Image (cartoon, rainbow, N blue to C red; front, top):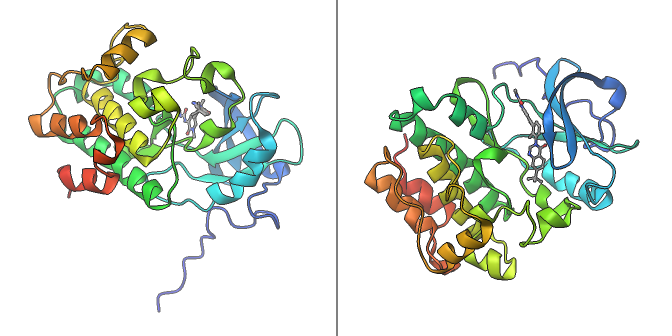
Length: 279
Ligand SMILES: CNC(=O)Nc1cc(-c2cccc(-n3cnc4cc(C(C)(C)C)ccc4c3=O)c2C)cn(C)c1=O
């Protein structure tokens, strides 16, 4: 048998609660930006590049999250941003994840729109990678709740990973959690989410259709500058986002499948993957 690679697994040596990370082993580097929970910094966990979310007090239901972190560290897929663990023995708590070099997919699409616009192969490949990650989450019966290009990350060689899956459940901010709130992602929300807050893998499929539209429009805002109330009317009345200029018909047909009103009639992520051209 070939000798096992000497390289210990990335998360080897984490303390006895394997999801608990010893902060003395973390070196914090530059700030990457800030998200719903506050500042996120680049860091090193021994020699491993990591991103560290420093949870601003009062932004998260921390105890519930720490309980769930044990489940989330078990989720492992090449198209998911890996959760390495948490530092929960001090405040603010830290969430330590895999680090991706090229930041959010939304930023990447906008920064590279010239070279991406009519390169449908690259755009299709990005959608396939996100779909692969979502097929895995669907199989694990894990609902993302805020799938969008802004919540995906880009690594080296255009590798795309889905991030922050499931974290929406722990946000303490009525503006984000209530469907009437200014931060609620109305433009990615399925009708049953707008009307009843009914989240499912099929509501993730609706959001995935909007993400595909974002990719083929290189990061344009869906529904332009329409107000949330106008978007709700448009969605409820069955009007859809129109086909992006450089989008092949068969790809737009996949988007339209994602936007079928009855959730159970939408395809699953594994059906979507089969309908996308992939190796
Ligand atoms: C240059 N490379 C990089 O910048 N790489 C990276 C940047 C970020 C990063 C930086 C700042 C803010 C956020 N961010 C953004 N949106 C969020 C949304 C939510 C929900 C709950 C609303 C979904 C929760 C947390 C966040 C959040 O932490 C991220 C992901 C994370 N990772 C892993 C990187 O590799």
